[in-house]
Figure 1 (tube, helix red, strand yellow):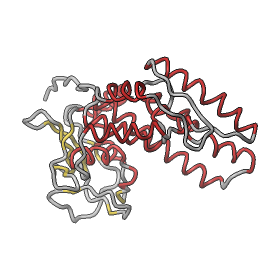
Figure 2 (cartoon, helix red, strand yellow):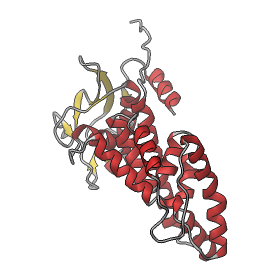
Figure 3 (cartoon, helix red, strand yellow):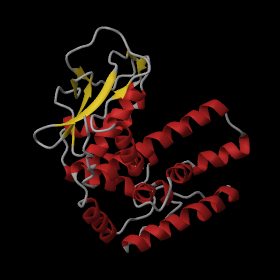
Length: 285
């Protein structure tokens, strides 16, 4: 995915100026405060570009006006690749701004504004709580078809993560779920401590989408693809659909939305875990 972003950068040159197909209305404000509200607003800018500030951080500009967060902070990201990805989200908007489709922008705003004022330790503890109720750890006793499906699909992932991190997790059909050993929690806590605040913001987002630490780490570690992880997180629902059918449009919409959010979260983790910069080519006049 990062390779595609770098290619995007080379295509547009140093300015990263992306011309809009459909310019918006005339009421352009001097600054834009991104809102996560679902109300759609008319697109009021024509060009999207990125620039690097004096502090080395990257900014996103809409018609040369600097983007700001909902909290009024200057919208800055730690590297160029993430700036390109956010700029691409803004350029992809057409006549109206569908803020609910701009997952990377939302994650950046969350990291910058930190509206709940949480620390990295608090985010790690919240993630570990999901481990105690992890989707792949809760099993059913019946029907037989679902029991076998969970065993065949979830057990290999559990075995992988136990081997990968040298931990014991297990599974249970008890309503209380499996009892996670303290040593396992400590191992995962140490691993999550290796993520910075931005990356942890993205990882927690993926965990909340999949309701699973196991599946989320599988995606982040590239053991699972996004589509595979989403299917595994919805295994019981998919089984019921197979047996009883579904409302096709609703099922497909939910599936695509979950894939989009999970993919955005995983990309955010990777882009904020690395010092991702793009070498500038000298441009001749």
